[in-house]
Amino acid sequence: MFDQKAPLIFALASLLCLIPAPASCASVKLTEGCAYGANALQKLDIYSDSEAKVSKRPVVIYIHGGGFVSGDRISSVGSMPQFFNGNGYIFVSIDYRLSPQYRYPAHVQDLARAIAWVKAHIGAYGGNGEKIFLLGHSAGAQMAALVTSDEQFLRKEGTGINAVSGVVLLDGGAYDVTASLLSKSERPVNSQAFSNNPAVWRQASPMSHVKAGKHMPPYLIFYVAGTRQGAGQSIKLSRLLEHSHVPVILKKIDHKNHRTLNYDLGRPDDWQKKLVIDFLQAHD
Image 1 (cartoon, helix red, strand yellow):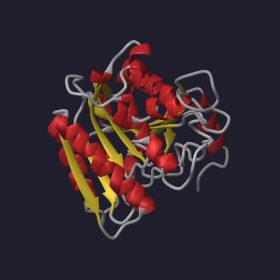
Image 2: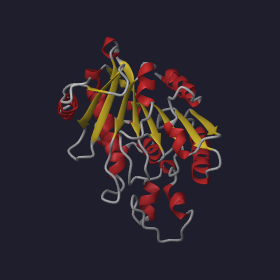
Image 3: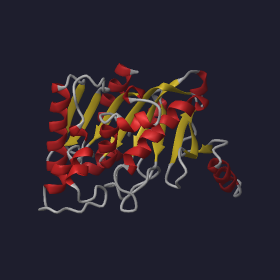
Image 4: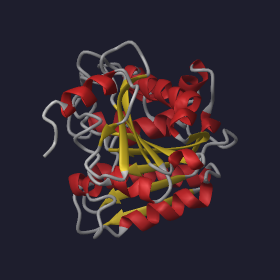
C-alpha cells in the first residue's frame, strides 16, 4: 500500500517546484506548479521522463482551450504527457489568466511569458530551450497563432518569434476575432475576452499580423469537419500563411468533434498523433 502521507508530501514539494511529483504513468515525472509570473494562474507543469537529463529534449508547450474563460493546465492533457515523453519530448502545460476578470491581451501576454520562462529554465529539467513547439486547442490555438504572428508579445519578454520552432493548432475558431464575434450577433458585441472595441478585435486576430518576411515558424493546423467557425477560419488562416510563404499543413479531421480532437491526441487508437510527431521531428 501507498503511504497515506505521501500525496501531501509530494504536493508540498511540488508547489515549491523542488522535486517531481508522481504522474499517472510511472515513466513520467511531473514537476507541478512552477510559477512563471506573480499571478496565481501563471503556473505551469513540466512532464519529463527518467532519461530526459541524458540529452536535451525538444519541448512541447500545451495551451488549453475553454473560450478564454475556463479550462486549466491539468484536466485537458489526457494522454499527451506520456505520448510526447515517449517520443522524446518534454511536455509543458500552462495555465493563464482568464476572462472576464482579465481581457486581451492578458491571455497572450501570459503565453509569451511562459515561453520565455521555458526558454530560460527548461534546461534544468532536461529540455532544450532552443527547441520549443506550441500545441494549442481552441482558445489555446488562437493564442499560439497570435504569439507567433504578432511579435510584440515575445519581444517584450526579451525574445522573439524565432523562439518557437513550430506550432500545432487544434480546431481554433478565433484566428479572425472580428469574424468570430460578428458571426451570430449584430454590433455592438461586448466580448468577455476582447471587449466591445472593433479595433481591439482586429489587434487580437492572428490573421491581422500574418505577413511575408516575419520568419514565422511552420504550422500544422487541424480542424473538425462540419464546424463553421473552426473549419472556415482554419482554412482562411492556412491560405494566408501559404500566401505569406510560411510553411503550413492543413488537415481536416472526420469522425471527431471539437472536444475529442484534443482529448484523443496521444491515445493508442489515435491516428492524428503520427501527423503531429512527423511534423515536430521535421522541425526539431
